[in-house]
Image (cartoon, rainbow, N blue to C red; front, side, top):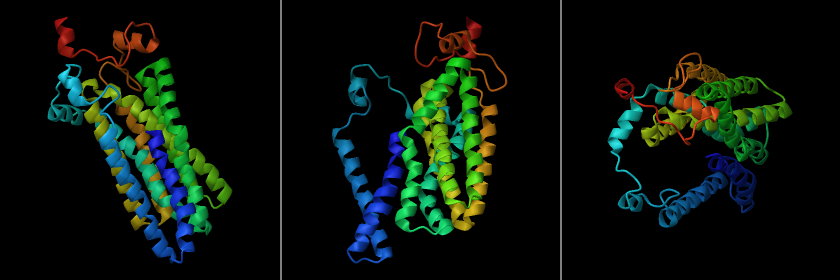
Length: 308
């Protein structure tokens, strides 16, 4: 996921700092050059999509149709899986939090270059190069966020993951508010690096929690939460379209800080929450490393426990 999002940084460099001045050198106006440059990523995306459809497998183990024929993959009703995932409150809490990290990243990919042009009076080429820093942090930050979530899990189980999720969002939100009032270019770039690192760490942290929400419906839940990122981008994008950049940044920062508090309300069956609950014996043994099983533990239904 992080290296996929790295495309945002590569695109800023390729389009704004390389292709844009090249197209202008061929005699196009700035407006014509920018519109022409936008054709390049569209063509690349189309060719990549066709290539993936032709040569890739559905998953690391092969194509779904082959796995089902061999009995290695159960037939699951997509509607039932989606309904079960969508009816889980935790899905929507993480939906909002993901909107406040991945949605923020998409918004910054669109707004950062123009912001540096307007506030610091930079040329498009320079502003795009600086804005690309946000995407380049994906080289390590998203993976590091997931890694840190795993480490917190090894110390405190799901409670550790939730605390790390909130810490990432609090630092992210604080950086947005600081960035919005900064008038020094060097300081703004420094804040951008910290801001971007914790935006993407929060993304990795979110998907460190996703597989535990309801393991049999993980695919649907992952899709819904992923859509939260795009929804957040649309909402924050409207703020930047209708309001001044400073006000839009402040609204975005406050929204992120509020979303950090939602971790308190995430209660996953069989796991401790931020302030309450108890881990089931199997789950506690799993994160403490004293159990014999591996992977995500599926807690038994309350009905099953009563029967036992």
